[in-house]
Length: 281
Length: 293
Image (cartoon, rainbow over all chains, first blue to last red):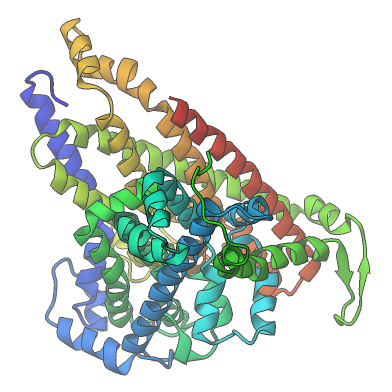
C-alpha cells in the first residue's frame, strides 16, 4: 500500500527485501557451491563461486552413494518419494471418506468418532514415540514401507478441512441426486469429489512437503539401509566420528533432498498458499 | 452446524470412517494410553517385572536437575525462535506490502525456505558454522571470535535458534502479509490525509489490526519450537554441549531409545501431551477470536 510518494522509503523497502531474501538464501547458496567442488577445495579454501565438479559429485551421490551409508542417494530419494506420496494420498483418501460419513450421515457414535479424530491433533509423534514404536514393532512394521506410511496418515486437519468444505455444498445437489434415485457412493464420486478438486490440490501440496520432511519416525523404525529415506541418509553421512565427512557428497545430497519440496512450493505457489491458510498448519 | 439433507444407511457410515478410526486407535489412542499407564509403572533393572508406583516417575522428573534444566532450555529456545521468526517476518511483510513493483517475486524468494525440512536446515547451518570447514566460523575467527558450538553452550544455543527460526520466518511472513493486505486501503488513506506518516500509520493502524494474526502465530511458533525442531537439534548439537540445547523432545527420545528408561520417558511423554493440549486449547480460543473479528 503506497499512499504518498517517498522515493527514499521506496529505496529502503527494496533494499530491505533484497537483503532479507539474500540472507534467507545464503545457506543454500553456500551448500550449492560446496556441492560443486572437491573435498580438498572445500576444506582448504572456502570457495565462494561454483566449481567444476558438479556432475561428478551428483553422479557419485546418486549412483555409487556416500561412504559408510550403504545406500545410494537414488534409492533413498525413491524411498522418500514413496513415503511422501503414501502419506499424502493415504491422508487425503481416509480423510475424504471420514468427512463424508460425518457430514452426510446420522449415526450413533458420530460425535465420538469426531472427537477421536480431533484428539489426534494433540498427539504428535514426538510425544508418544516409545509406545508408538512398540506398536509398530508388534505389528511387524519395522523396516517396511507400511511402517513409514501408516502411523502418519491419520489427519485431523485434512478431515476438518473436507468437513468444512462439504458443509458449504448446497443441499439441493444432494436432494436432486436422491430424487434421481442415486445412492450415497455415486453422490460421493460423481458430485462431491469433482467439487473438492481445489481443496484436494491445496492439501496435496502441504501434505507432500510434510511427508517428504518426516524425520523422527523414519529414524526410529528404519535400521535396514534398503528403507532409509534421504533425510536419514544425510544424517548418517554426517556421523563419521573422528573421520573426515565427505562434505561435497553430503552437500550434493542436501541439495537433492531440498529440491522436490522447494520446487513444489515454487511451481504450485497458489495451491501452497491456499493450503497453508486453510489448514493453518 | 448440521446438514439438513442426509443419506440413510445403517452400515455404510461405519465403513467410511473405519480406516481413519482404525489408524487413530492403533497409532494414536493406544500408544498414548500406553504412555499414560507406563508413566505410573517402574520396571526393575532386568525389565522382567514392573510395579505400580503412583506418581514416583513424575516426582522423579520434576526433582531432577537435568529435567528442569531441559525445561528451561526449551523455554529459552522456544521464545528466542518465536521472537526472531516473528519480528523478521513482520519487518519483511511490511516491506513486501509497501513494494508495489516486484511484490510477487519477493514473495516467492521469501516463502520457499518453509519447504526445507528442519533436519536439513540443521545440516545447512551446521555446515556454515562448522569449526573446521565452515565459512562463517572461518570469517568470525578473522574478526577475533572463536566459534566452536561443540564446546560453547551459548554459541550452540544461538546456532540452533537461528537454524530453527530461519525456516519459520517464511511461514510467519505469509500470514503477516495476508493480514496486511486484508487491511482496507481507506483506513491507511484516511490516516495519511490526517497527516500521519508511515511510521505512525504502522503503529496506530496496521499493528493493532494485525494482533489476532500475531497471537495466532505466537502459539504456532511455540508449538513448532517445542515439537518440530527435533531434526535441528539432532543434526547440529545432539542436545550438547553439556545439555545446553537438550530440549524436551530430544530428551524424551534420548531417555527412551538411548538410555532405555521406560517409566521416565513415559512420564515425560505425558507432560509433553499436557503441554500440547494446553497449547491447542489456547490456539483454538484465538482462532475463534479471529472468526469473530
